[in-house]
Structures are given as structure tokens and as C-alpha cells.
Image (cartoon, rainbow, N blue to C red; front, top):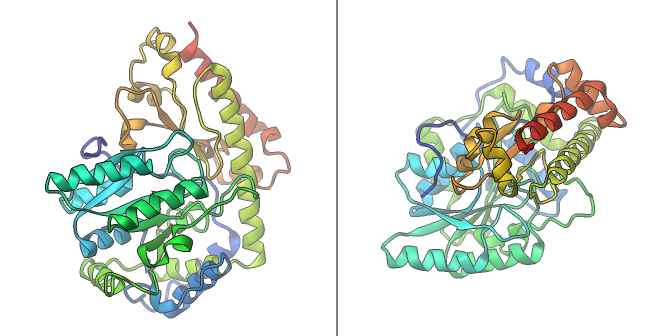
Length: 394
């Protein structure tokens, strides 16, 4: 079962950047726009098709749904597919929360050593076998190809093995691709399960990962053209309709513009990725110098260090568990919030909290040629380093 504390809010991430002026203008102009239909109107669904086609995935508007955030989409998928949820450990907290709402089981599978976001394929098959032997029905696997909380990207060959195992076990794969456009190195190869297993994959993208501000909740789902479940999109839309989970009209209009990716928004997105990469790499250098273990961040604005090697020094400062460690550090969330072992000293650090305390400061960090030289960013990094050193000093 998921180890996230009952009743605790999901550990959401925030890119920490103001809305682009073009999006803010579109949002403001749409206050008197007609209400959106369930699943989004043709304009926003067509824009989503263009977004995916530019990434090599031909898509038709009737295979796309828009919802007010990714959680309603995943909950509707679980309701439509039936059965239980399978996720890697650690994983974004909101995945398991949807299964809990429906009273479904959550089966956690350990991640491999080289990345997060996907389960170890051998452990996945063993977990599914044991679950079914015990009467459970694992039917839906969520993978995160560019992962929150670890900030890593799953190697293509490993992702292929995981999806092959899931398909062989008769499970639907939901590919969370929220951070696919936030790769720190443009040469990193990212494989979508929709490329290898198109008939068994639903692609999900939370637009709050970089296209829209988190305060404007919107997410899109891309359904397979050849649906082996016999029409999955219709039942999912029916669940959204039953809950009246419809995006606000101004948000949908802004989402359509964001998904169309005009030149100004592409340039802003590229600047955001440069900022995320520079600050995440700087934080990674700090935690490695201290003696913590941490995979290098490859995407997004988070990393997931393990302070286990520093346990004796931390205990000397009264820090004996991940919750106590996270409380002492800015932008940190304890590993158990992501289903991790509560005895392990692992935390997620969200590096976007270091970009500034005001919109003007965050905008300055975004446009800086060398973000680490921006005074308030440098000060925030120094303060984080000091906090680390104070906690780990023998």
C-alpha cells in the first residue's frame, strides 16, 4: 500500500515562474467565453493534436480529452478500467491518491538503480503475480518518463522492458509526460510508451509542468487510436461528466495557446529549462559534496537525494527521519510522501523555490544569461548549502 500519510495534501511541484504575458492576456480576454464542454472544445483538443504531432505522434481531436488537472483524468481512467493501480516507488503522490478515492489497492514496485519513474521490470512481474495470486486485480500501470520526484529520465531500453512486461500482463499503461519538454540536455533520449506500445498506452500531460501556471489547472490525455479496451475514451469522458470536471473557459483558452507553442512561448520555455538545469545541477553538486547519494537531475526542477550515508551526523542534530530532515530545508518534501520507505533518509528538493521571492525576481532569474550569478539566486543557493552543512556537521 502507498505509505503517504492519510489525509496529507499531495506534494505538488511548481515551476516557480510567472505566467507568460501572452498567456495572461489570453486568459484575461476569455472571462466571457462560453463554458467548455466536458473534455474540452475542438480548439483546445486540436491544439493538443498539434503539440503531439510536433513530437512525432499523429493524433486526432476525437482521441484527446482536456480536464482541470491530471488527477481527474487518472481517477476517471481507474474508474473506467477497473481494478488496482501499480506505481513505482517513489512516485508522485497524486497517483495513489486517486486509487484511494475509489477504494482501490495500490501496488508499489521498487525502481531500478539507474532512474526513477518506472518500476524494475522483473519486480513488476513478480508484484503482479503475487497480487493476482492474492485475489487482487492490478490493471493500470503509471510510468513517469521524465520523473517527479527524482528528476531522472528512464532509459529507452528499460522503459521498453517495463511496457513489454505490462502489456504481457494485460495492463494499461498511463505515461505521465508532464516534464518531457524539460530535459536539461537536449541530447537525452526520451522514449514514450506510445511509440512502442501505442495500443496499450494513454499519454497524460499536466500543463502546470511548464506550459501554464499551477493556479490554472489543466491537463490533456491522448488515447490510443486502436483501443483494445473497446472504447476507453467514452467511459472516461462519462466519469468526468458525472463529476462535472470541466476546465474553466479562460484556462482552456490559455491552454489552447500554450499547446500551439508560438515562437515567444517556445523561447520562454527554453529559457525556463536552462534555469531549471543550472539550479538543479548546482544543488546536486552541493549534496554530493556533503556525501549524500543522488542521481544527477536530467529533467524538471527536482532531485531526490539520499542522506543515508550522513545518518550519524544528522542524528547528532536531532534528525532521525525524513520528515525531520525535510522540515529543516527549503523546498523539501519527505520521501514517505511519495511512497518511499519511512526509515530511509530520502527527500525531494524542489529547486524552483530558489528562483526568487517575488514575480519580478523570478522573471529576472528566467531571463538571466547566467542564472547562478543572479544575486538572489546565488544567495538562496548559499543559504541552502549552509543549511545542509549545519545539519550534517559532525
